Image (cartoon, rainbow, N blue to C red; front, side, top):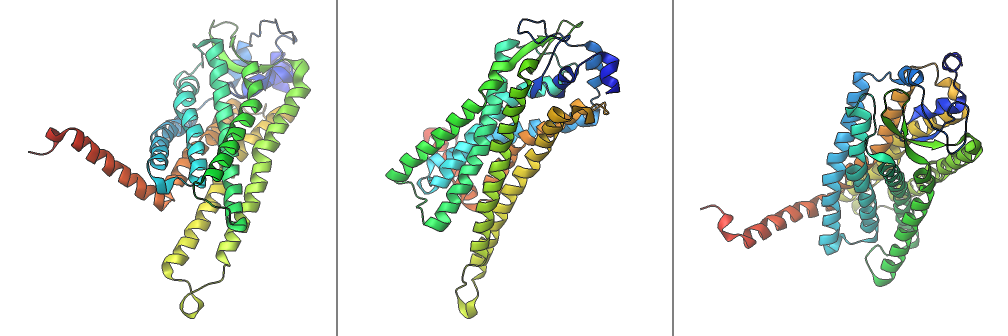
Length: 369
């Protein structure tokens, strides 16, 4: 608390600097009225600008890789699923929905984040209130869609395994699938509404530039904490519990399924397929936990024990790092569902061949002479 006394700030004011794009609460000069100026202490901002070059490079690398991987990879993944009838299964339709939400984050939101977090050392925001609110809202809503889609994929795989639910695209399954996807988007869009409501561009005291943040009036502090804990439970704890249950049961069922073949042994190719499926399930679950657990741990400490972060000059940098790890989940999803799925890779290769043949057919004079 020594640093708080040094800058004459309240705990609520201190919370503001822990994430210009994250959920924050701020009281400016002891006021909490909606019409207050919301100017931020330059001294305190200087204290929190301890970003190291290594951290900036790390965060920038993750975000650039996310744009390239999700931008290109998810377009190809969605095109492959749409173009080939064999790929139009219920599971792949859910994966396409996941790819679409990750694509939105990577192409629409991440470029603004790179410009704001990495390119501009002083983090000025030049794009106004509306763009600030829209980018924050789209980012959080799409991330919730991604999480809920992963959860839906796990539940569908479980039901397919243990209730013999058809995975092929039929009229009945298509209608049920559309309802599920619409519910995922509706719930995710509603959960992110407070982000849009409380996101604005706020002025620094002396520089004249703005920062883009989510600022809650201090009188709503209990409501904010309840809101964040609801998100923590619905978008991390509950999905992890359900995915663990589904994937562990599926893995055990696959591994201990009665063996067939000579001498009671599976053919090598079948055994290899079993191992690949189990690896895919484990990697999917572990990557989700590894990407999002640091972010949620940081957010809980920030909101419920902020004094633990005040001892570090690099608390804001730490936030950027853990948030970048969470955002990297989209890139990880793309790598998993392309790199670890042989059917997707085969059809993607066929997509390139078909596109090349179509180009040659449309332009017969472009071939070799």
